[in-house]
Image (cartoon, rainbow, N blue to C red):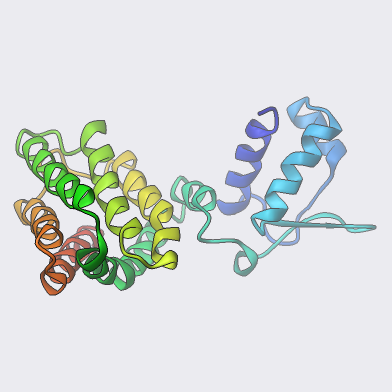
Length: 225
């Protein structure tokens, strides 16, 4: 879409602190800088407003909003923040959210996942082990499978709020890899825990699934320092 480069650039500037709260933007200024029409500039501003990053109004123009107004759980906002100077703090906050949510989601999935999901979880965890032990833990296939495993657990929990956070978890996992924080050889304990949670869900053991997922997110938090 035509507004995407404008949206990306301004979103990163705001979430990265280059444009601070109270800064005022204009459609004419945006159009001149990015060489786009007012229609494109207006659409980009509409999307930023929906994300809580700006507010527009008569006689005040387009005003950048403070951090507490942002939609901090929107995957796009998370991605921008992970690319900015506050990435370490953002990763810590998101990992703490994962610690609060994912173990219980895994326990719920052990009770409610379909047979097909249980089979896919086990196969996915085994492939993750193969890739990790072969030194491909920082590769795109490992990343895609890691995201898939966590997504399956969240979406199979039977809890609509957990399911709604699946995209947030995916962005966090992806960000950790693309920021170079995922080792080529994952910790054996992490691979063990991924396989343990898959096997626990497969046999319907909610307590074991919860404990294994807690181990996974504890390892992630520990790796952040």
